[in-house]
Image 1 (cartoon, rainbow, N blue to C red):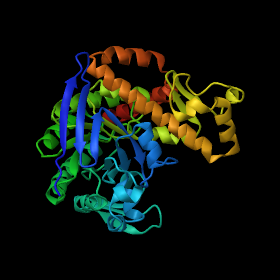
Image 2: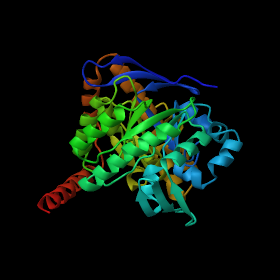
Image 3: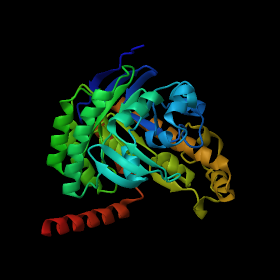
Length: 393
């Protein structure tokens, strides 16, 4: 049965480029801006679907590459599709597998036909094409699926330009292959860290009838000022009436920044990965609960947080669980980090509705101290050295 996929812009913030919207899918309505927890293997690590619902999650991302290799899309389809397989009743987004093919697998060949690679699990050889990536996602049955794209180093212009043109050709093939009308197919803008390529990619893909547009190939190690420069040249050139999805972004400060620049959708493994390593979010920045200073700390992670973890457990107890290697500690940290982001996105939506996102952003970023500022500066320095070498070559 065909189910209409719609996106409606409800309000535009007067102080920034922030947008408030409603994304209607066959499995429910998504209020945007929205952050999607990542369920790589058809599960958000350490949490059940019921816990995710209680946290307020409205969209989950699953990974095409991993589910293709194990347990296989045909098996999932036979068992009723991804929603039934993972017992999640809400909307699901699947990526195309492009990023994982280029980052995890043993690449054998990349050409216009597709990507030949060896599985990181058992070394078996596979050819992933735009047609196959689309067919896999149709078998999985997600509400939103992504076109197959080529991910290149954002700082290598020849590589970025070649990958961008190939991504455009693959996008046309994904559109031609796509059959399921109850799924929304999104295109992905590429172009590396080069404004003219990003502009060209946004223009070319906007001419194609996608239901929405991802911005890919960013948040992969480039300096943050480069990330935001690329978002600034890309987002305004995408169709205003369709959702804009900045892929792989999930730190609190980046979510606030990106929404103010006109982005509607996000995903990242960051909050769950940090939680499993003992790092948790607060309005002042991250805490590393493994540190000895928390051994006798009776306070919750955050005083005014309403999540289950903060309402019942102390920093001292959470540190004890981590030191003892208890799985409960990972669960409780994950609950808090995702609750923090769900609450943050709700606060952002309220700020947009009330035309005060600029003030909210200034106040939030004035309090929140990123722990990776030093690494950002080192990354910026490294990036500058690479660009100078390329210019001198």
